[in-house]
Image 1 (cartoon, rainbow, N blue to C red):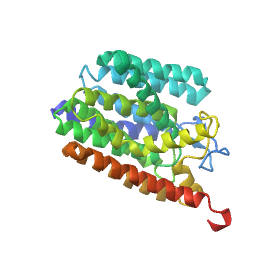
Image 2: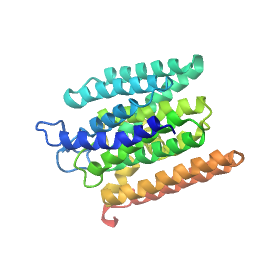
Image 3: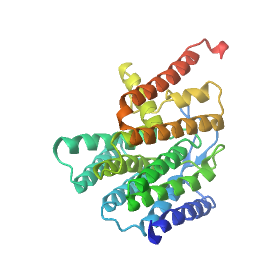
Length: 321
């Protein structure tokens, strides 16, 4: 990497840290109050996303790559809309409209048209929202960002894409600074202003890297698979039961683990292990594409075993837990 590219991740960490340190000394912050569907018990500020986006914003000053500009602009537009939602609340339709507009604008800038544009838009909107769905336990979304974007950064560096590597590394650095405040017990939550743009960035950068032949299209899916699989399976099951999938709930598998008695710290370390395994599998597939079929079969079997184990414990009579 050139010196300017090294500066991006080095600047992102202190920018996020200092921003959050300053914000937490302010009064009248947007608070996440516990309700029947929450895993936390005390009101907690939900301004962590502002720190993360401050880190990403400072890092982007050192990155002049034209291919990254649409991603950065769209991510910050979503952060602004989501911050307004955190503070005042916005209609669901308006939030979804913003997600679709950001996704389409970004993909058009990438040169996608027709069915590729449609599929890419749906993928980005889904990832944008599922990241938000999975941001429900201390350290979870921040850990996914640190490990997921860290894997993308390493793959981009190995794939001779230094600007993309630096940008992903900057997101990782900001996430690590955020985890200093969010690791159980959390002092601050990410909020929509962090989870929405992070989900968008995961999908948009995954597509950008695939189009630039930096990684195979399966690579980012495997890296972020702990979130993708949990959210997708959970919402599919809720839909099949006729439940309103857009309503808040506590039926994600990671939520069930806590409700079954695990601490948030135990859950965080278990999910980090799964995230690292997914990243390791992605790099294995990248190096050995001829073994894609059996590697994917092994990973699918791993998730199936995890889900069946949680379901079995969940369905026991409560006095047996």
